[in-house]
Image (cartoon, rainbow, N blue to C red; front, side):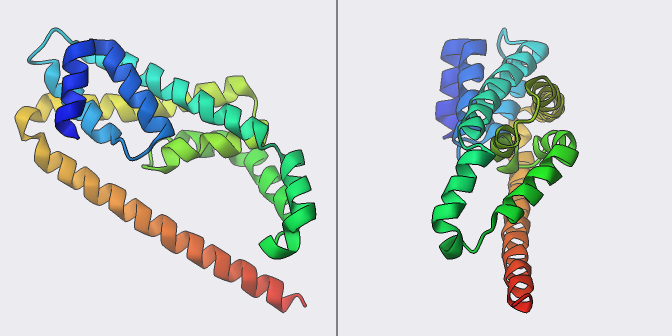
Amino acid sequence: MEQWITSVMENYGYFGIFLLILLENVFPPVPSEVVLTAGGFMTSTTSLTVWGVILSATAGSVAGAVMLYGLGLLLDVERLERIIEKHGNWLRLKKADLHKADRWFDRFGGFAVFIGRLIPLVRSLISIPAGMSNMKFVLFLAFTTAGTLIWNTVLVYVGRAVGENREEILQQLGVYSNSVYVLLTIGAIAGLWMYKKRRGGGR
């Protein structure tokens, strides 16, 4: 995949970076770590500039986030309420659970979006609950751009600094990503267990 990513950037420059990062946001298996570190390295071997790579990647990331935010708007709380009315027993959900989650996002949504943009997989998916909770678009855009800019800047500069030796950095980032996936899985299982235990104890 890295060869294909490099080829796209060589052929299409900043527009190629924009498209790759846009794709990464809506299709997480495309690794932004590879795109950004490769882009950083190419700033020392091609006419690409560090800030050109950062800004085009940030534009692609924000565009992808806005698309997922729009998807969240379509899956708004009212629509989910109707789903819970029909399938709540099977899903083991109540409207109160939905409203509690919505209130939590209203309270901490900005912080969640900002931090989420620095965490693999979450960085894409966090846009959907932001849309579902009808988070103010201007705030969503601001927190998304800020978190994305930090992520992109760090990885592009890392790619430029380590150059052709970035394979070791990518392996370390892979360990970070895998650790996050494991923690998210454990957290989801633990949360589901606690939720079922609480529901079972309330009967």
